[in-house]
Length: 120
Image (cartoon, rainbow, N blue to C red; front, side):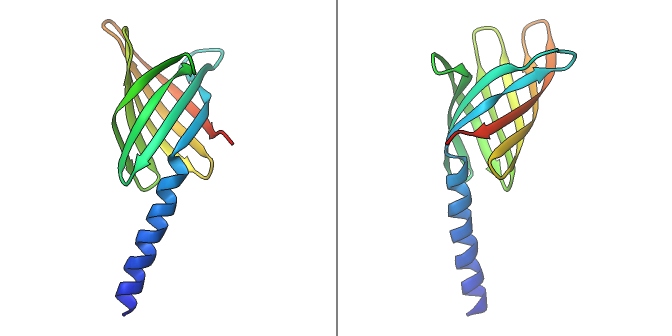
């Protein structure tokens, strides 16, 4: 009986946690050595461990999310533009997503830090 209750609570809390990521996330990323942040608008939809949606600098420039996953508080997804591929590795803490971004283009790999807040 106790095991059944524990499993039910885990499933319920997992469902509530999943809903926290769904929505708009706004903030910026700052490239290593950069002196200012680059705006980010990430629109997420979570279904269990799968993450879909889009991201870009604003509403008018969005790219589809690929390979989106959620594992506990760890969030990973990728965006591809005409010139670069963006690999996000973030950690969720409350209404924030923070972490690392790797940007790969034909001739260059850059790293950045990402700070996003969930829009109300």
